[in-house]
Length: 149
Image: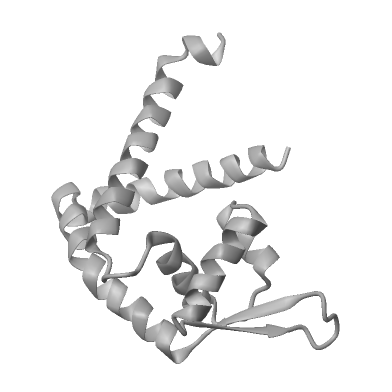
């Protein structure tokens, strides 16, 4: 059976694509003024990992081009949310770290979107969300592997 004849695959990915589109739109509206979802995503990653990353590493993590990541990082740097420094061992490379202002902006964004996310989880039910997470994670891993083929 080809993928185009597989209603389960089509239904699954149709739902994922629509959920992604709706979630992005909803969260974008809930973000603090001037904060974009891409900015929040980078700040959230840097805050959670608590480690410096190179722009190339961030581009790989978020599956975007280096140019797109450079644009996001430039905006975050102008806003004072990240520090970008040269690699002391290789002047061609840079490292990015979240600044105190970036942590505050990330925390403010989390406070803005948390009620939206909490309401959705409550509507679906925490137990059902917990049960779905392993499947969604496995799908993400498979998609990452497929992208690297």
